[in-house]
Image (cartoon, rainbow, N blue to C red):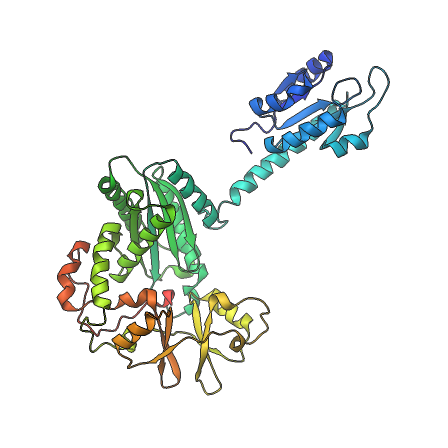
Length: 470
């Protein structure tokens, strides 16, 4: 629907000048702006210029609007989002057009000439329906609870801004919830409450904040921002200030109800278009910078430049010859918080995934031995099936498996490794999170670009991951 369209505007078409004058006076007097047109062949042109909501077309015999002409207008009206009302009634020669042919030709409704009350009722109905469609279209672009944009709307906004060549940047925010006594608090309801609070803060960042969307799967937020001309360094500095303001404002925000006591850390990554070749790369850069901030303990804002500098450090720390001689799989894993028995249903698993932020859960046999890993994406189809039917066989390692062996398995590649204590699954190692291991002391000076001097402990320390990001 065209922007700024008057939902009550009418284009009246007839070769009868007296009828046009009458209907124009009547509709204008009751609040329906009307444009009169005496040449039916110009309907599409005038509709494109004036953008009326309704075209009221005289189809009586002798007016020049045949069923074939009406069909042409209807075909063109589809692109103009135009409602067609056909005036009907006997012509001066007494002949009448067959009504069924008008409907088949594309008329949305038929109105008797002179039936002013009926015409007014039809126009009111059209206006109300169009207003409802307009509101529904806007609402479909927003999450009904948080009022943040949907993922589709965000991607459209990013693509549009990118194609316009405007200076822009993306802030990727990751919210980490500390472990709670009630695991149910660490699920989608928490992230929804977080996004409601975040949406209010984003509104305060307007007009810089163009669009924001949240992901209930991991509690992350993406914010598209408009920046000023001045080059990558200036843009990155401006974007970092916006991210710092968002992070600071969120620290002062108290979540409602049962979430009031859940402590959150806010990790922000920022990236500007000057350092990316596509919207997808821009999003990836911001995400990686946010992960870098998260690895440093959270409550930080990390720029793309800082992330890239730290990435060199992480590559060195992850190398098989990086002196992690005392580091084992037990130091690298994230402990499992939940398990499922082999005879439990996928419906039970679905409830667990909905109530928690887990993206995978180990499946146990009768003797509590490990059978496989059930992924969130695997819960589909017939939910009455047992979880053992769809769990995946993920490679396993022992608690004391060395860092070098773990690294080699991840490079094969394997996205995940399940850590076993005997036959019992105790934790999960993910390739994209192995860098959570603290850096050895000899790399401490390399991390000064992040503005911290107490982020690292000696190699071999156990990094306890947040339960919310399991």
